Amino acid sequence: MLARRRRAPVVLILMENHSYEQIVGNTSAPFMNSFAHRGTLFTNMQAISHPSLPNYLALTSGSTLGCTSDMCSPRSFGAKNIFHQLRVHHHAWRAWAESMPSNCALTGASPYAVRHNPPPYYQDLFPNDCPSHDVPYPRPLPAHIPGLTFITPNLCHDIHDCAISIGDTWLRRHVPPLLHMGAIVVITFDEGESNNHVYCAARGPGVGHGVTRAAAFTHYSVLAGIERHFGLRRLRQAAHARPIPL
Image (cartoon, rainbow, N blue to C red):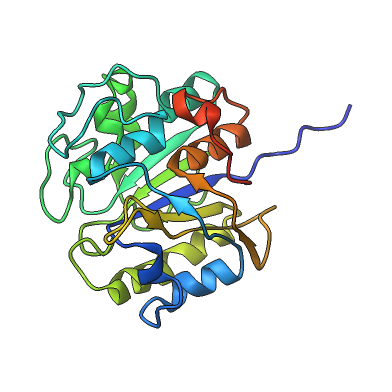
């Protein structure tokens, strides 16, 4: 009997508040442009909403769940989500939030923004999963990474509050070790600034090298691609979205 092929781990990194045109071809973002050229660039990726939090919910639950602002309360959504899906199907996950003061912190403490860290919003991740799996960004990195790692840089490094070049340098330092561990790394933005056309690129095992995909994709496509990669049922709007190939 043939052994089942091991799925590559997936790392999803969310950057902040810049449109596609502000990143692609910008000399202040050499790493993000090189990353895209060496992997697959999705040239027609659309975020779902404004402001930040509804997009993070869309990326992880397949819906904005009626949240229309950044003020929706943690632990307020009973909706199924990718983190719960992974656990019940015996796939490990972690969320790494840079500058978070403690595991699964429910309130912001700048430069940590809870609105950029989705696990605290889902009721089914309490009392155990969020406190044990949603952790401050680890230093040093662990020797192995789980099935899915959701990475939230802090408010400077995700370029919410700092220059594009600073976030690009952060990615240059942090992404290569993840690729060396055999991960598929997806980098995208929660929303755009001038519009919701956002940068999204992927690199890693099985991902096309030097590929551009012009088909229409959304944040729901990112979730659908992750769910398909792990053999999970697609949640809500992800069921109707074209999955990104991972």
